[in-house]
Amino acid sequence: MKSTYHPETDAVRIQTHRTEQMEHATPMFLTSSFVFDNAEDMRAAFADETDDNIYSRFSNPTVDEFVRKMVALEKAEDGFATASGMSAVFASFMAFLKTGEHIISSRSIFGSTHTVFTKFFPKWGFSFDYFDMNDPAAVEALVKPNTRIIYIETPSNPGLEIVDIALLATIAKKHNLLLFVDNCFATPVLQRPLELGADLVIHSATKWIDGQGRVLGGAVVGRKDLVKEVYTFCRSTGPSMSPFNAWVLSKSLETLHVRMNRHSESALTIAKKLESNPHLEWVKYPMLPSHPQHEIAKKQMTQGGGIVCFEIKGGLEQGRRFLNNLKMLSLTANLGDSRSIASHPSSTTHAKLTEEERLKVSITPGLIRISVGLEHPDDILQDIEQALEKSMG
Ligand SMILES: *Cc1c(COP(=O)(O)O)cnc(C)c1O
Image (cartoon, rainbow, N blue to C red; front, side):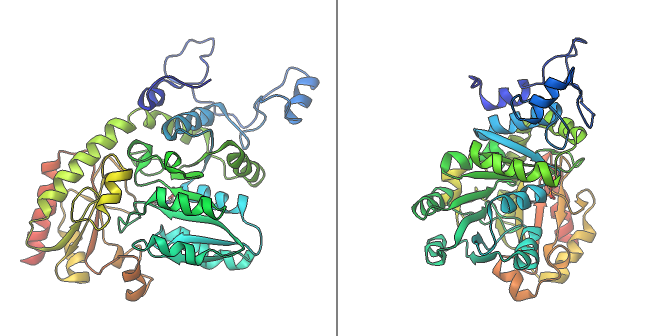
């Protein structure tokens, strides 16, 4: 039965059936398996004649609650929750690719996704080609007879590059390919790729969806027949979400709209102020007119999200000094937290790449990525400004 509520209402109100205890908050079903009244019920469940829960690797009521909310938010037909964002990405590839098949991906993607392509794909006879985010039309020239999937991440981590989802959906349809979108940075509050023609949406729930830096999680949502393939792969291979994490994440979804609005408003305020800072070469934010793909951002996103990037004058060394001079912002590998976070990709997450490889994915030597939290925007800005001042002193 389709809900008639707005997505933010569904994110608050979708809940597992109330038990006879009449609890108001949602219960947590920490159980590995489920019992049957008799042999016949058990036989029928195993024969897929009923959708009774059998074992928590396959399904669990708390995990289902989280999935139903994600499905409502992305306006999808069905979904499956995984232990992390990377298991959602990996399961989506493994469910569809056969040996000898090919995938086309945007070049600017999450580091571990790049590792899956370069280190593990060759082992199974999968091949890939990257296309540049500023030339999506070049995708067509990369399509081969064995191509199966187009994969994109938009906005990208950490470079905030944006690809036109609707344009790529048209190309995918024309060549009978599947379009997968990693929607981690935007969340369904700011961008709904399925409405723009994508086939499958992939999430790291660890980031904005949790929003408080507590648990790992992932989700895949989309067309029912496609999700079934992902489910079938996961059911037997085991990257399922824990019910504890699902409980935490389901509660998080109740505040996702409120949080994403605040993260985006603060990020825009901070980005605008930093644009005139004399210690910066440039500032990048999807909703600044100076962003190279600003027109696409306006077309497919309702707000810019919580990540702001800038390039410090003086490159690598100044980037490191800036981190050392911060008083409030956290230095940590996560993003999408209520607490603001600063990171310097060139000296940390992307230090193993050569400078040339980094530049290809828009990681310049002095690039700083700020994950704007829920503190007062003036306090976040003040910490950034004082650290910039001190680093230059
Ligand atoms: C963090 C991240 C992932 C991986 O998610 P995990 O939950 O850390 O496994 C995938 N894509 C993007 C864009 C991310 O930022």
